[in-house]
Structure formats: structure tokens, C-alpha cells
Length: 126
Image (cartoon, rainbow, N blue to C red; front, side, top):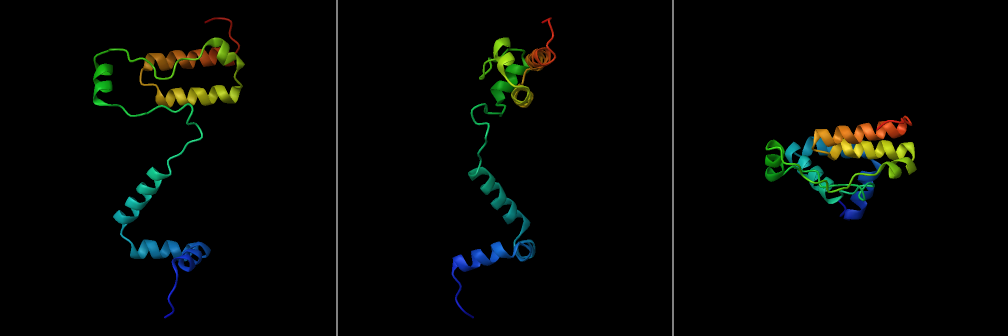
């Protein structure tokens, strides 16, 4: 059998995805595959929204502060009404989605949602 270089094997696997899938499913353990996928996901963790992203984990201290009713300051300041008025509708919806995903305080989240809806509907109250 001829010696194959890693490059040749790599090209073959890329050209034959069906074979590659079958090989990995039959010959590699599920735990090993999961470990590879997790490792790959962690090393390639990038986002187009990095400028808006916040660390989204809840530490024990953060959790205890929430349980005890102590308000935690936002890492990302709220946008003013004027800033919201200058944004396009798509940007406003993306901002709202980020708020829903990141905001831990339900009262603050409701306020942000109402403020965005007010601007989107051109409401005169608020």
C-alpha cells in the first residue's frame, strides 16, 4: 500500500463527504466526536456582534444579588430615546433581541421592550 500524505488524505475526505461521515460514525466513539466538536466550537468562537456582546454567564454572586433583590448595574448602558430614533428598524430589533438575551432583570427588560415598541410605533406617550 502506498504511503499517503496528510494532505492527500485531507483532500480525499473533503471530496468525499459521505465517506467521511460514515467513517467517523462507524469508527470514532461518540464521546470523542463530541469532545472534538466542543473543542472546535470553543476555539472558533467568533461573533459578528462582538461590539454589543456581554459576558452572559451568571455567577453565584450575581445570582445571590438577584435573589436578594439588589440591583446590578448594566454593563451596557441603556440607549436614549434619541439614539433609538436614529436607528433603523432592523437595528432596533437586533438591539431588542440582544436585550432579551442578556438582560437578567425582568423589570429593566420590560422597560427596554416598551421603550423600543414606543419608538417603533411612533407613540406620543412614554
